[in-house]
Image (cartoon, rainbow, N blue to C red; front, side):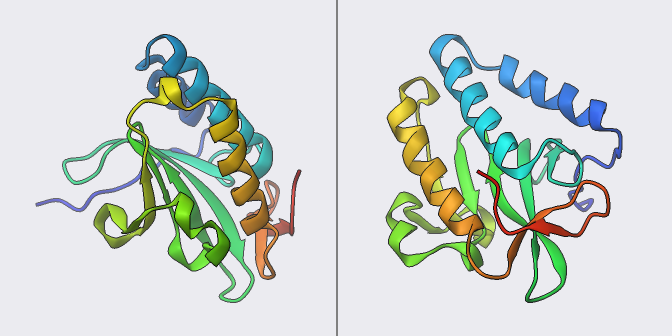
Length: 162
């Protein structure tokens, strides 16, 4: 079986086009909520694909997803921080703060990649729920050693964006 790969394009327009296709696959309120949540995440991480976020196309071993990336100062590497799927989210477990573990209830979810939450209905994922997750993500991004990826150099830019 061939190895699953991410969308390899370095052209930001390709990533945005694929992201828009994913958003368009939702209907009604689910589309609005999904788009608003992704918009808030892109505002946090920076809109510089494929550095700060990357769209990954589906393969036979993985679903389409948006991968938000951070620079881990402890290892000196860029790692995925959060994966957003059409079924929910997976956060890299090494960045999860104990006080937010309850938000990501599925431990070692999605092929053991991180802690996950299944969102059965994005239409019901309203402003209050989006706010809880955004607050948790902002707090985890503010942790020591975690940096937003700099769009110019691909390395850590700052400890936090609000």
